[in-house]
Amino acid sequence: MGERITSLLLEWMGQLDYFAIFVLMAMESSIFPVPSELVMIPAGYLISIGKLGWTGSVVASSLGSIVGSLGSYYLALWLGTPIILRFGRYFLITEKHLQQTETFFARHGEISIFTGRFIPGVRHLISMPAGLGRMRIPPFLLYTFAGATLWNIILLVFGFLIGENQEWVKRNTHWVVLAAVLFAVLVIGGYLLWRRSRKATA
Image (cartoon, rainbow, N blue to C red):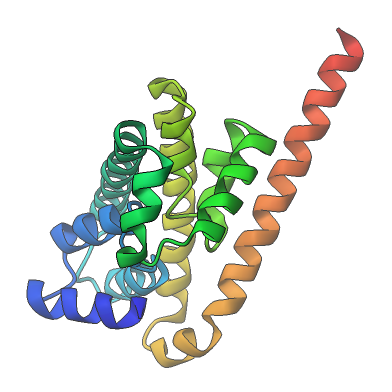
């Protein structure tokens, strides 16, 4: 479903350029089911052949992620859970997915905005519990920028290294996602250990 939507959007926009990266990543970070792997990995390939640059790709993707995340944040803040669930089914948002994301946010706090960018099913919804919980905007933007930028760079590097073998990428994207999930788990574990050590020395 997400792959078909991404392909249709790229056909409509004509090509994968900086503007397309910005728009698609804004959608990916909001309620639209646009997988970031289908945008940033091909962008990495375009960097490898000189059609795109690193700086422009990173800036466009990061700005898009921030805009999309802010959209989801304020949507949740203004509408609330009942209305989101009522109309969310049109954007493949289920009560189960939203509940999982809210639980993840409640359990891990602000760091979940960062680590949630690496977890499928959580990534494009993580801004909603932040809005519902009225998280302060400065840390929300900081963690969103850090997590989204790192994730986007990882995908760009992957696409750059893989080069023309994009079919292999489509067949093995799950390994990229798995590696990202493991990274998020390590970050959460390190954060929890750091908090525990601070409490122990306080």
